[in-house]
Length: 387
Length: 179
Image (spheres, each protein chain N blue to C red):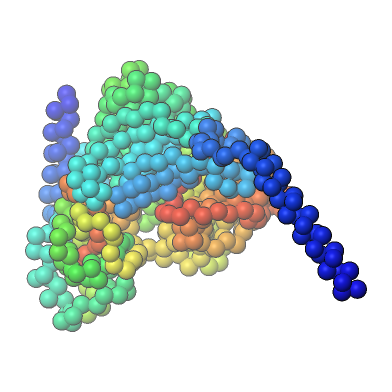
């Protein structure tokens, strides 16, 4: 038996030795060396864009995530303390940021960079006045006009103003002084925007046809900046603007007449035990088809807690003034919803450094369930979803 | 026109600094806000508390403070702080670390001193021009307001008015009684 096995083994070894040169030859004939290329196109499909704001001199980035599973599909890069905007069709990424020649010191430039989202490639740069607000990012710090002809950029030196960029010409056309006011809330038609002022009013700036001059109208008092200030965060509900206060009071405003007017106020935490208040940065997001407002909220509200992590995401029926569902969350500080019949939520967790996707069930009072997440690896307060 | 606008913005910064200094030194936060609002109606830019050249030393030693000021975030004068502590970076509670430059402008908080039970105005200045943030993070943000009340906005960089924009850490200077 032993001899038979040895014979078989020897035969197998011999056969292998004879075959090896032929195998090597075959490999040599079929081997094709790999070549280095850059992928030309970003993977198609709905995306979530997250601004990762760098406060150490840069680079900041806008990361493109697949809205499907939150894998990273592309990146647009910029300098320090970036603000961003995405075109309505999701094809163009606008980033404004600071470039300092020695990162923490040296010659300063503030630059608008425009990227093609399909290729994640830089297409244009526009030099801006070195006045761009160096402020924790909020969507209201940089906004496109409704027709995307103009880009409005919030300045603070700390004197506040807005730089108006004509995107067709690729140049700055004017700087609108807005002393004591901050945030940019563009009109849904024409070339106008409103801004929140420190005395609790809003001022609406309407640009001339060529964008080079403006007229302003100041509203009546809308909110109390001392007793219950509103966040910069906002969303549209139909033609109206929605804001929310530290204490969770929703201010529904109209800018249709070229001046801000109050439509309604709704205290969403009224009657809920536990001193609940709004908690986070991007805190107002409205699902249009269902009329549902999603808000990150936390209990034990106190002076200074307004940017803390949320404990729950509330789904609030704004038309019927009814709190429908309270989804427990951990670490979430920003939330946006898609405008679909069955909404999807995307949230940011600053402490955990991640972006999270939630599926929402309209049949279960808009309860949300986390279904995917990915790292953001940085300081994130703003995000946008596009189909 | 461009020159005119530039002069206007320069004037706004200067006017705001002077006005804010006057308001902040003689008023509590409530009154401070009311007067700031009045100033806005009058067309003057929102206040920011200017850098105080005294560095608050005279006040600090009259506050019943211990010889060695605490470094933890719960220390009373850090009530509105949002940043990192310069006392852990070679500076002190009231001094920027060597090689940095104090910010020219600052946000202000109103903090209660447990030693005498009085409210004080505290100027939070960033220390600028040196990279690589330093010190333990501390975010209490009491009295914080968004940028439409810029003088109370802790989410802003306060190195914004300096030539060198890098933020290294933050100090807390007691600049006056709030009431």
